[in-house]
Length: 238
Image 1 (tube, rainbow, N blue to C red):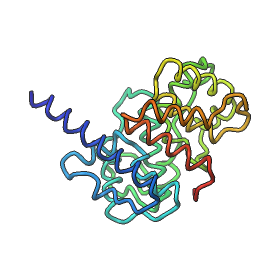
Image 2: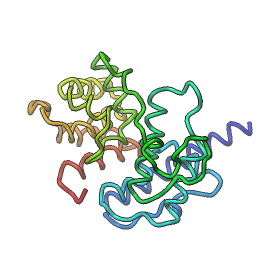
Image 3: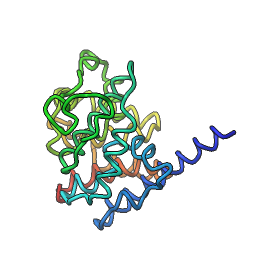
Image 4: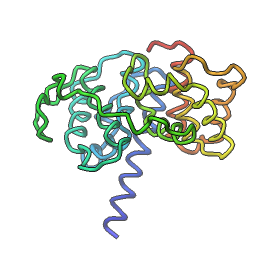
């Protein structure tokens, strides 16, 4: 029962944080991560949301406050991927580290024993993306949707390079996700598609994103991905 209660609190914390992020992206107003999460469940919620926990600062190129950076870096340090973690978990953690460093934060506590924890090249080295080599378009779309926080302007890495080489496959995956009513995967794929060249004009991405937003509006995670895609697509300050 206690474990179930903890899971419920975490789920509520993730939903609350995601909703606050959506509001900040829509309004263009200030966002304070430290105020959006509790001391008890905050670090875990931030880790679940990943690099998107500071998305307003990333997309609008606004400074993150020292309290926000402290919360974000605390989550990075507290939840390193365990040995044998999935590639998406490893990449998600790397995305958080890179985002923290780009926003001016540091990882100056050697929590996971990795040299260069203060942001040196050794610490910021990319994980391998070989698990995506030869992936089917269905699998590729699924993996990219999970790693949607990597889909940001100027976010060059091995995963983004794979996506750039396969825009038609990602577009096919977007259509498939919509048909399967997998709104979260569709929203994540749509976020990637706004950054890719070579997306078929026949896809109707803008109308597709509107449809996904309408159908998936009960899930703030879906709305967050769609709002991020819209900001990047419409040329908002990113």
